[in-house]
Length: 356
Image 1 (cartoon, rainbow, N blue to C red):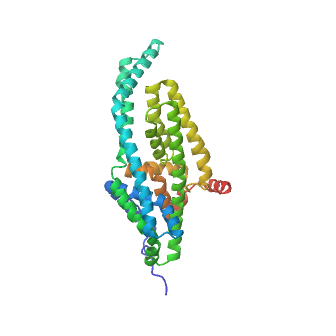
Image 2: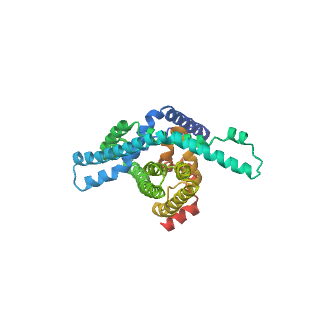
């Protein structure tokens, strides 16, 4: 029996392309308008992918699902409660101290401008004050810290969704096999997506955790206030490619400047640089092997795009989302060329393969 004709077989290529673009625009518009629902769902999916391997490991050792699932869910709940307590306490303390930090930073800015003017530089203090508000920099830090707390506002919804996702994870393969025409090919693609995203998230979580711990220890040694808060910020923003680590360092460096002076600020900056170079440029590429399978430009563009669509959550998940889209595009002959464009250059891919 011959296979049924493709729905797009009789259409000209330009029409198919226009339909694909239109469908993409509709999906993106839907995601952007439903961001309040999409973000908790995607965060739950993110958590489920991270905690699925421990669940499967317990099941493979003969532990019944009725026992393995509650064990994993309790671990997720404990981690969320610990993060919530840490963020809540740190955000409250930092918010209370923020006006003093802003006033101190403004004083330091005034003193620096006065020193520059005394050196004979042609500066108008009034004009500089109007264009540059040093205290506003700490206000931006406060907004960033408050946004960090906002990530956990839907904790209950995320936990419930994660529970049901983990409960369905074991049966998903059998359901997929029952509804597709070619189960072997579909399951192979599903396993490819799952293993690629899971491996990336596992490695990224490990390196992010190491980054957060080292940042926290270093700031504790230097004497910067709220080291646990900045360690958590470094951990979370390390998931954001290219610019996440830079953004995470700014609040701690500003606080070190205000609290301890320029010398401590230099030590803080040096610590961030050393930690991020060692882990981001040394350890992480070795663990990644073939890497994300995306070009550097695509990683940056995906960061901007998903950040625009979904906000901070989109920035955190930009690489996994783009990796999933790339694998899906590779599976179709008509869209395989798009996946090739999203990937690294052939020379770079061969180099990663040899390194691995």
